[in-house]
Image (cartoon, rainbow, N blue to C red; front, side):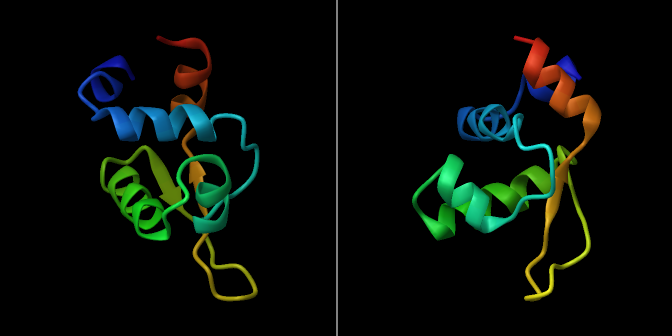
Length: 82
């Protein structure tokens, strides 16, 4: 995990650290509450975390919004790592 985490830009590292306590699926709304007040930044961060395989996309919720989840190895690493 360190090899994947180390080269991440600071905003992505900060996002992971803010999301590590989320035990369930999350989406843009949770990003707005925990990570950034900007909807555009929240979407960009989610897309980048997904692209880098730090999170996975799940099923859309009833309103059709995509939900995401941290991979368990990522959650454990940011909780107990650097």
